[in-house]
Length: 487
Image (cartoon, rainbow, N blue to C red; front, top):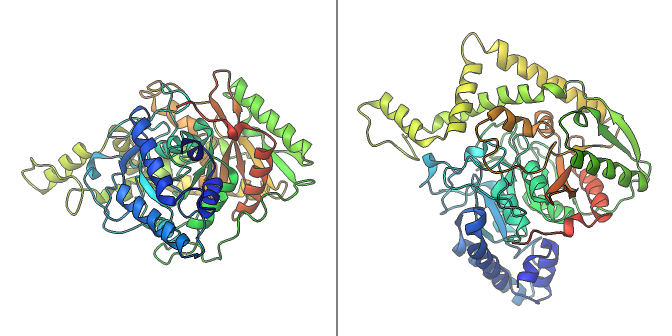
């Protein structure tokens, strides 16, 4: 069974359909592997065995009756612990929600259950999805499966580690400034952030509502495309959801890219890039050339402001969104308050971690009287300029490529006391969230220490089909995606 767990989601799905293995057997094997190795990884906050096995039984019953199975039916999946699943704890890896049990399903959860995808557990994350290393969880750190002394990337580090270590073939994460693509890069798997509005955010615990987007983790581009088909689609519960038909993302994976234009983002190939990462991106450029693509250099003059823009807008929205966690209706409430104000203050002081408190204070300051125009309004104006840069860039290129991150996974604790150094980890990924465009990280090699390197591919808004096409063509030219950590 371990051999099957190491196969792609598509291969696992075919094994179930061909009755080589039952969905219940595969789900039990996934749960057994998690119990066997997750003490070393810390990828899961909780398991949802009953839900997963009930879903798997439905798959086997349908198959026994000769009924058609939905896409990815029976393939185990990890759900990031900031998405609601009825009856399970949804903690966002925060003490303030440590004992909160979901009273309703997120829309993506409903879609997974409708497609009979067994959800085996809730994956660990940086508290409220705020972090780039998954060291900010209130419960435990997540370790990188390739080297347990390294970070897996954040905030969706648990989801990425689960897929990389073959605990599950699939996972969902959320990406506010790179929180899917960065862990995918560090853990040597595929991670994809869709166009803003393609996937419903209903039932996702909000960090920054104009930036958050749910997306897939997988070990192959095809698996990621299949999972996006399952979770995408209009939802009237989410006012930012796009009312458009779901595309068949797998239909054009192998389209010829000869004559297509690949743009190199010059601004992300400068100083601060490690030699190994630079070499990997240069090799990717040669791969696309060999496939007949035309390489063009692209200037994004305002991308250098992305970090500053992001850490004003994201923290401002975080300050607003997290105001609801006050000890009144749900979540942690302090036991030692003498009055209402003290109850608010002590509840939030006890419940939130340092990074969350830091971002709430930054955002509250940016929104405060006398500073709103100088910070928040100015950042929104600059966000438009970043978006316009991408619009102009996609007039010259079909897709853009860059490193997912200037470096590979760093040691646990090495940036814990330097928030600015941690924030700069997201320098290549943040701009896609500001512009609302789709982005993906695909495995692109390894550094001298054997740690994975990710190649970031960006496409225009609603350009997921092209994104998967270019990712798949690159992936099939190499065997990077076939390599797995020895854990």
